[in-house]
Image (cartoon, rainbow, N blue to C red):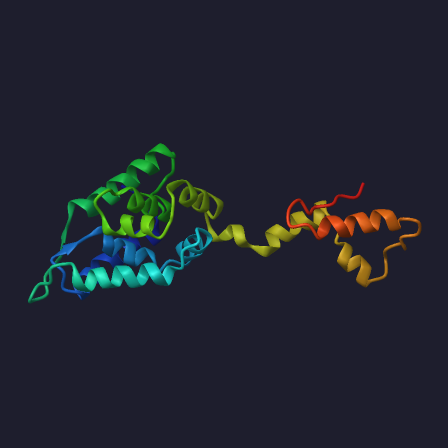
Length: 198
């Protein structure tokens, strides 16, 4: 089973969280708690309309109050739910023909786990599976947010009228008052406010 390095870190962190709390078992909630520390997942949750702090608070309360604690430190045992998360993520990796399990596979697997507090927490927050998948596929990696990459295509296929106006490179609009008034009217609408000049 091949995992991305950040997924291995999440799994290790989940185990260390279970040890830190002196829990008898490592559960999907430990994985979920570790996943919430990943910046990409925070952005995805925000794009789904869920503040990460709310989920973190709920999962912390669950970990502190609902799981059995050992009197002495021991190696926590993996639960069936924990194994299901990993196996489902592996199945997702195979179906999507990827080389290794990534964070997206883990978060979808957490969402799909039936009898799991993490899943119910996500659903209670109003996240729908389709919306989560769209957010994950829209934000596949942090490289997509590279502004130089985006800027290159904007500069290539568009004209920055604001910059041209600041440099006094635009010709005056003589005899185009009607078109200018219509453009302003279009821009003031709540919907469909994208005028195009040809």
